Amino acid sequence: MTKLFFLFLMLFNLQIIPKSVSGGLVLQGIGNLLENRQFKLRCSKSSWFSWPLKRASFYRNETEIATVERDGLLPWHSCSIDVVNKSESDYGCRTTHYTKTLIIKMLNITRDSNTIWACRSSNDKSNNYQLNVKEQPLDCNLNTTITHRYSENKRDQQKVLILTEGDNLELHCTSNSNDAEETSYKWRIYRKGEQSITTNKSLYLKKNITKDDAGMYECNGGIKNNTCVDNDDIEIQINYAPRLNITLNSTENTSEMTCIADGSPVNYTINKWRHYVDNQLVRELNGTQEEQVTTLLLDNTTIMDEGIYVCNVSNGIKNLKGSVFQTVQEYLQIQAPPKSLDINNEMTEKPQRMNIGLRATFLVNRSSSINTTWYQLNKITENKTLLSIKTIYSTLTRKMRIYNNDIDRNVTVVSSKLTITRPIDELSFQVIVCNQYGCTDSDQIIIFEDKENVSFSQYLPVIIGCGSAVVVIIVLIIILIIIRKRCNNAKKEDDVHVKEESIKQQTRANTMEILENDLYISADDDPKQDNPTNNNQQDTGETGATNGKKIIHMKEMEIIENDLYVSGDDDPQKNVNIQEMEIMENDLYIPAELDTHV
Image (cartoon, rainbow, N blue to C red):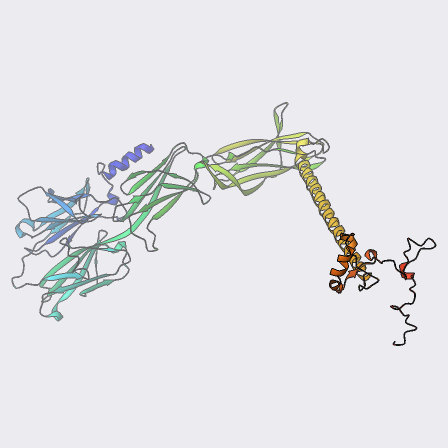
């Protein structure tokens, strides 16, 4: 069925199958029916949101005169004409996307008066238009001309002005009449198969034009109470961004969407179809393209195909919002029963007179009205018992993989509660969800275990976590011990340093300074230390050099025995303490008590 429909579209576009009258043709006459004047017969589509008018044949009194069609090598306003009777050569043409115009370059009162004209395209016939040609007044030499602001740099022999939607349209109508006050002007506009008459002014101005302003604009100038008239016309074409329309044709397993573009110019760029689910892009699909039409065909559709499908087309013209590519979307609703998404094999503690939660997840058609039935299953007898429990419906978002893409999909969760009056090991139940397209069942099972018999695997994560914590604590203790030892060693080093400084200070306090004299010779200057055999040389050579001060420790002081001092080592009778030693009076020593100079 779908393939036949697509074949019909192709034949329809090729004009092999006739179009319906509802999208038929309209024939209009443009100009003054005066002998030797130019006159135009304009054949147009009655609806502009339709297929293009590729060609039109013009008939006079049911006899074909000429066929006008677009010249495929030139722009749309360029045309080619095929005249049936080659002896009639005074015909021209003009074409747009939806119009074909036959130009009678010079009316002949004998040939054309009281004739009936019509246009046809693929057996689609227009209305009849009758020509009543009159003679031209002898004293009428009026010449009317339409100009516009592009006239100097856009001289078009076909009298076609192409603008873009949103531009301003400004046309000036002038004549060669010497008396401007007596000249009257009247504008006629032919568009969408209709004729409209506007104000009687020489200037036609309209701002922010739209595609609906496209058409044939005719200015009629007249003098002498319009007994002498002349006209000029210009074809206004409006380039505009495509207007898109989608038609949807769905059957039980097949869906077909056709996107038709209406824009100007017709050099369309049609992108791939896009499939969105919950505002997330799922996939891009190639459609079958034929000029301004792209068709997407989906076979063997499932609920996974449901969603929004977007058609994207451009002809290079921006819309009024500044977008080059235009889009239109259609929601495809699949007529399918709910889809069960998963089976919940839950494990929990064995219940004791409590309510058990039952639930299942389904993918349901967006506009479906659903109802749910619950059953308790007996695996041994394979019987099922109807559960009279209340159902709660909720919509949640969960990750789903649709056509190789992970998206967040809105799903329907059905849930309920069942009261358990005695301990059980497991609970098997079935939930059946139905909509207007069918039913889907889902079997679920809940396994119950005693708290102390719960399998080791359930506690494995806890054990691993505790073991990791113990390892971390041990490492921290080792680090603290190392830091403590380093601190103690540093403290000991500081104590030793303090003790050494204390000993040095004590030593300095016990240091005695003694000047060398006849009774004392420093150990550093004692010749017996270095050369005990050369006493005389040491006495004579070192005398002058020993006048400096020497700092001698008590333990290192050497005293030579003399008459005043007897060494304790040689005194057999007593040990003499240096500090208690008594010095006898002599020439060198007088006690302080007897010194009269003090």
